[in-house]
Amino acid sequence: MADLLGRNLLEPGDFSAEELAGLFDLADVIADAPADFDRRAVGKILATLFFEPSTRTRLSFEAAMLRLGGQVIGFSEAGSSSAMKGESIADTVRTVACYSDIIAMRHPKEGSARIGAIHSNVPLINAGDGGHHHPTQTLTDMLTIRRKMGRLDNLTIGLAGDLKFGRTVHSLINAMKIYPNIKFVLMSPEELKVPDFVKYDIQSGNGSTFVETTDMQGAMKELDILYMTRVQRERFFNEEDYIRLKDRYILDNDKMSYAKEDMIVLHPLPRVNEIAVEVDSDPRAVYFEQAKNGMFVRMALILSLLGIE
Image 1 (tube, helix red, strand yellow):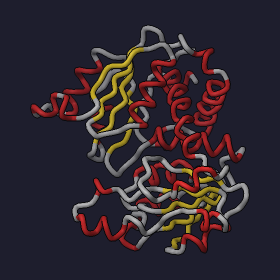
Image 2 (cartoon, rainbow, N blue to C red):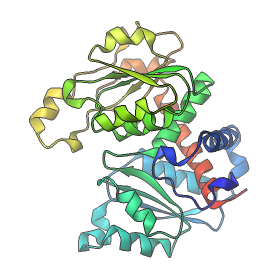
Image 3 (cartoon, helix red, strand yellow):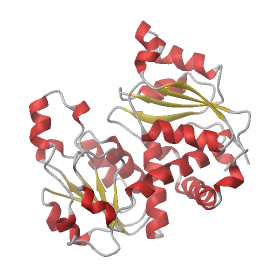
Image 4 (cartoon, helix red, strand yellow):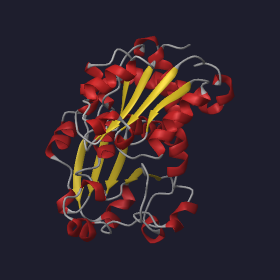
């Protein structure tokens, strides 16, 4: 993975299909024997700059670095950083890069990761920038798909829920469009349809296509993958609109009965009530396995960007 040494990861398209394959191969090795990697990053420091709340992403990054034998510094909310005093993203990143070897940054504003990367002299990983991209979640999703389905091409992927503000959806589409014969089935209320720039992404892909529908149950039978998302309260300006839309798509055992036996259900988490708890016991529900894969792929990413053999 020498080609990734010193690079930033700001959006999924930053890595080629060959680079992604190498990264996933390494993640597979780590997942199969994590103890073999427990001292690979001794002496290295990861800085986690989280200007927005997070559970899985932040703890997954921290667990990844700690399991590699490295150390972690950082903050978990803007209120505990000098951003509260008016410090710019550029100055925060410049300063923290003096103390660390690699940075993972989450910020509520689109484009913030790119600003940070311009001013960083260590690799910077975008851990989510507003409604724009969430590339390490996408790596997690893709690793899970590859481990469960055995491929990343010739798939029909259903995406349900908040497709307008869902950065995980935008990132997954951006990444998967490079593989042959990917069909996206976009399931959302009219108010939460996928933006036009994301549709353009699909049309510029490697033979990828899409259809839009409001009928989730009717689409289930053709899906290889169902990617559920929550309707995000924090992206709404109007509480009434959130309440009206939040329960529009709920996956339960009845809807699962229409799906293929080998379909898998993914969710970036956290869930609210868009997946009924009864679905958790279905072997096709792999979202908690997906969360664990996130730690393994972040371990592989840290090693690769730092050039650690």
